[in-house]
Structure formats: structure tokens, C-alpha cells
Image 1 (cartoon, rainbow, N blue to C red):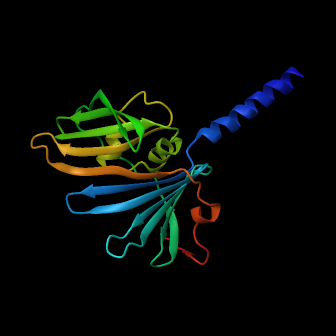
Image 2: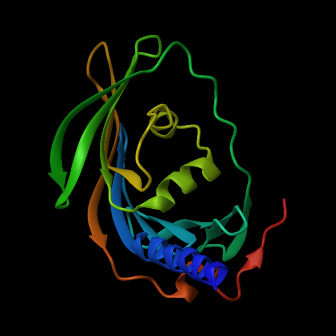
Image 3: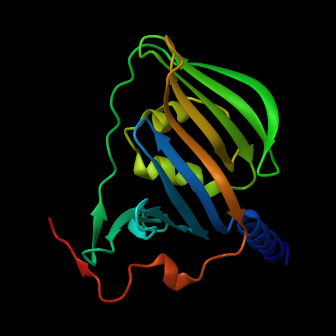
Length: 211
């Protein structure tokens, strides 16, 4: 009987943990020196779909589907109606040392956020992150699986000790010497309505592209 009770407790705790994880959609903008684009994360359990929107026509220009059950990334091209699998990138070596400092707090999208500043003098780069801890467990999984080469992702990984579920709601990359803005990511809307399963899959009728 004791073993049954322990097993039941573990099972129930797993259900509670999953229930606390974020399911829904997160809209954000990605701005650089040339352009600003709209993007949306759709999250349900262990599947995340990232839609990139075309600035000119407002339609979806491309998508990535992250499957944490299989650790597979799929890309989707709606214009050509094809899809394929992506390999995890190998990030470049970071020159010099990244210094991390923890700062003030403020609310973004009505969520408490803490400021973390990552500074690298040799790379002439400073990135300020405003990070919340609201059970966004998908974000750390996605960053690790994707392993992108952009400095926003690389420097974020230099912040040690972040609580589980952490995610930046605003981040700004600048040059140290002239404070010139290089890139800016900002969450503009959070919706806690879970997407349907079909919307997180490759659409029917799309052909697989084999490289």
C-alpha cells in the first residue's frame, strides 16, 4: 500500500507540474538595424511552433516546430508548401569574458521581471535582459535544442542560476562604445489559451524537402 501511495504522489505531482507550465501564445517583435518583424510562439505541452510574419503582406513567411518529445526541429515554408528537419547549430566561440550583473525589477505585460546585464568588452557588446519566471519552461528547452548563433541567445546562456521557467520579455543588444542599438526583442502580447493540436503540426499536403 505504501508503494502505491508513493507512486500516486509522484504521478500527481507530475500532473501538477505540467499544469503549471505555460500553454498559449506569445507575440513578440524582433528589431534590428534594418527591420522589425512580428513573431508568435504557440505552446502546448512539449510542442512549440514559432511563426514568422511577413512585414509586407502580414502572412506567415515561415515557421519552426520544436518537438521536445523527440528533440526534432522542423521548418515549414508555406509559400512553397514544403517542410524539412533542421539541425541544431554549433554556436561560435565567445571572445573574452561575459560579465553578468543583476539589477532592478519592473513589470512587463503585468509580469514581474528582473534585469540582467551581460557585458563583453572584447566583443564590444552589452545585452540587457528583463526576465520573468512564470513557468515558461519551453523557452530554455527551445534555446538549448535550437542552439542559435545570434548573440542574444549566446549571451542569455551565460546567465547562471536562473529559476526554471525563466524567459526574457524584453532584451536589448547594444555596442558598448557608442550605445548603438543592434537588436531588440520585445514581448507584446501573452495569451493563455492553448492552441489546438492540428495547428502545431506540418499542414496536410505539404511535401518533405530532402537536402
